[in-house]
Length: 311
Ligand code: AMP
Image 1 (cartoon, rainbow, N blue to C red):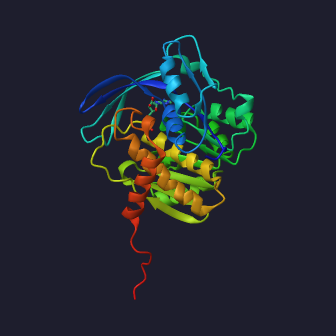
Image 2 (image 1 turned 90 degrees about the vertical axis):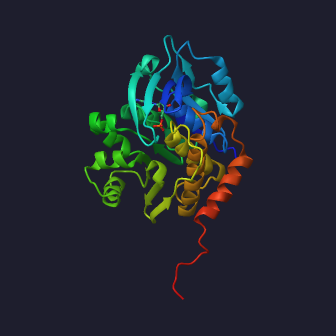
Image 3 (image 1 turned 120 degrees about the vertical axis):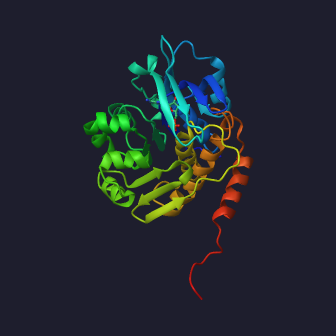
């Protein structure tokens, strides 16, 4: 395996999931958890986050067993961040019922010295000022990717604008793109975002796939069609983890348009594994061989024989 590593910063949580098939309380969650587990299938991962004294050592051991360095996870006095969500019957939408920040409220990411050389950095969805603080701590990696959410887009537009000047890749969903730009048309909105700092934009569209916009044009990867979808929680974070894991493994970075485009398939494949089971259960036992098989089915899914020319 390549020694290039991925640094992930973000939430580590207990999730209470109200699904059509039942309620699952206290499931291991958080954006950093999903991203780390996904990336770790492909590359070494270092994670920075915070947990409370109620967080079981077994969860940290699980991350370590998957090749995730957990030395950057701070254990603070108090309770772990907790999120409760309810999904619609078709799993296409969800409502946040409760967010208890707990120890996450005072989270100030401290990047350990040994992590500062990680060439691939994923800034999970936290306050943009904290994301910016991480950027200042790490210097200049090969690629900085960031996620954000509506809450920060509407509440912290200035800090977010500053952050955007420093990141290479922004990974958000279509609603967030529209809210960030005030532009309904995704292509026009993407052009607007690419003028604000990032050289790459990925727009996640859930079961409708994901779009990549960069200087080489627009690229689309579908969501892998599955018969068994149980829990979409963390799919976006797994997508981002899979993307950076692939880039780290191949050291391609954003400078190679084809590497980025191939990475989109690894990202979507990782998202597809994530949704198969409740919480990160499927990801935490995913093997490279299984990932390889799904990538091969993915290739067949989009293989049309090579040319669209009329003859
Ligand atoms: P996703 O389904 O990709 O949006 O990610 C869901 C994960 O994000 C869950 O495991 C939650 O614990 C976590 N999460 C929910 N709300 C927040 C928040 N406000 N800040 C950070 N992480 C959150």
